[in-house]
Image 1 (cartoon, rainbow, N blue to C red):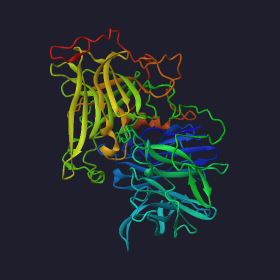
Image 2: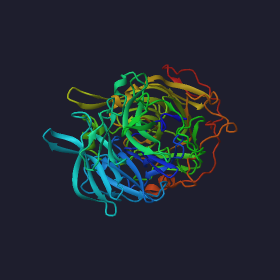
Image 3: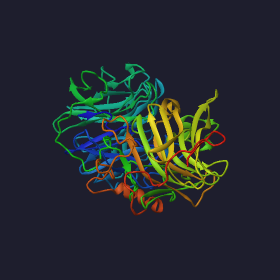
Image 4: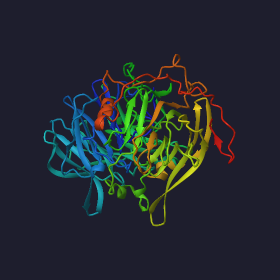
Length: 624
């Protein structure tokens, strides 16, 4: 059975291709590194991440301060034994490029920049005569004025140069369609089909299609457009923003579409970002009918009937058991940096992730008092290429629990902990820092952006709660629980003896409808000298992520017995782990390390009682 979303969490702008019995899928990654996660499936139901297409700094030059820049809308295609991934890097100043590979798990080539290719969302199409065509977006002038459209040109994939004249082949199905983008070309029964996204990236997003007997047009819009959208279902429908599709044909002639959509919290908040969904397609009278009978994305569909497949690694949509990161030798594929690592600040060694206290905090205050629009901020990228000490993974469920043990003795201005990150100006942090008395405290911090009447962005940072730790107390368990748009933050000496730091924190501001941009929430680990670089590390071990809405529940302290559960240790594909190996080696060994042993699944590393002392003389809670 197909269970939607097939890629839960922030996996937008999906593109898919089939090679024999194998399906491959990529998504946008924006300013996270490595970039363009790539997934493999044989049954369209289970998807295993096999790496990242862009896993080397020379392939993916990014800065960290604009999270919604970076990689926009990749397309994956296969032709005569070679895989092609084409995309846009906004952090390079809107540069379109291609990388190639003979093995989808990598390694992928260096960038082949396509000169003269303006706009975003490029795609490739091979015609029956072997010629390849490039499609993308552009702005052009005609009798209707200046507007955005879709252009097409032949391309030479030996030289990666455009050939001949550029042709405008589409402007959207609606008159004055907003943001026609994400084009893909297909050929079926003598017609060329141009499928695009339009309506913007939020509630009015849609998939539309047109066709022509000539690749350069003129294209006839389908009278049944849009062929997929949820904008007509009202603001309370549980999935919004449906659009940006790509089609794939099965060997038996059946068709499916991958598309993006956002699950809502409390009827309106899109905390998880845009996720990947799968819907069946049939063809009637020369046009595709998506999700026949309902015309909308359903939570489940019958199995496509492909051969039974048991993947070697954990499927990205399998959360029957908690996902556990023991920090053994290397990070799994679901972990990312923020921006391209240009210095060594993260190490995996002795069963721990060690993060160096870099100068930069996760809030780039240099953007305060500036025009906060996404594209105006993109123009400011490059002010700094200094890294932030951050490693994170996607929040994939509205109801979840994340737990980690931290080993850290803070001094003045230092902080380390766990963060719920939407972007630089909208985040929730649970961090250990030095308190007023010089002893460590665990505090919950909120950063929220807002705009004044002139459209200028401002940030506000506030403390929501704190718990005092004993002098020299350096080993603590940090925990975040999500329940819809609410978050609960706690700390303790063990996972079964936790003290609340901040309860029922409203996280609705983390949705893109409030925070802006194109990304979803990440759960990250971080360390910062907050203005001063330090030769000092915060250490983390045994990170546990579990969804709360599965029937198979973990034990009551959130830690299951390893004898009774199958725990994910690595997402591997055919014994190959090139992207993870690249994460170890980047920037002079950024994640190089050796496993020296772990304490198993239980996050407890302390023999102390875990009891909570009474409040101090100021009424503040205190850990022993």
